[in-house]
Length: 285
Ligand SMILES: [Zn+2]
Image (cartoon, rainbow, N blue to C red; front, side):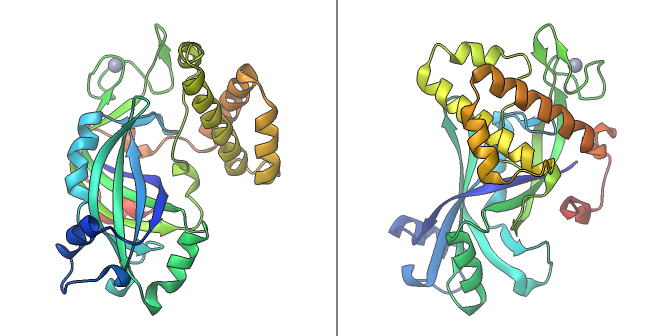
């Protein structure tokens, strides 16, 4: 099953000596630090996304080496001269109980990449779209192959939200730089918790609570933009900041529901496991 998700650019700059060593393992001729530009990308994590899917931590760990050496292209173009970056390091990270896959990409500094580097530095190109092939999707409630049991994504069973857990990665593909995230896959850190159980638990921990608040605020801004409410980003941000915890949850839940109706889940996810697809279809968003 082909999976495609949005991911976000984190840190940027020049490579450290250790990074340069790793880069040179992929380079045809040895490169110097001055010739290379590096940035970090958050590829994927184990939190439910808006498609009500999440990667299992084991899948993230197994995906890391599969992304090594994968190239980055602009706007889904396949020509080899559009290959602009390459992943030279990838590893699983854990923050506040969230497992995520961090990758480092290098690009050669030069005429061909100058504009893209400027756009990354300026925060214009801050999303990349990543793809991978997963061998199995299981139900988060009972662990059966998703579709083989009676549980459905987005429905809560005995207080447990059902999501599809992406397991057993088969391969990772090239990634694309995108100026605007594809609607269906947009967003990096996502909060999906219709029950509010997560928030209740977090209220005991002020620091984590603040981080959850921020996630909800970001999610509301993202959903507001995706749903084309006609409110610009600064306005949405200032509105979201004024909401208290309950209001944030209520607004996020309402917008999520609207988004779920407007952008139904990917059809291939309800297809039988093992169904083959053309490799190219992974890149058509
Ligand atoms: Zn189930």
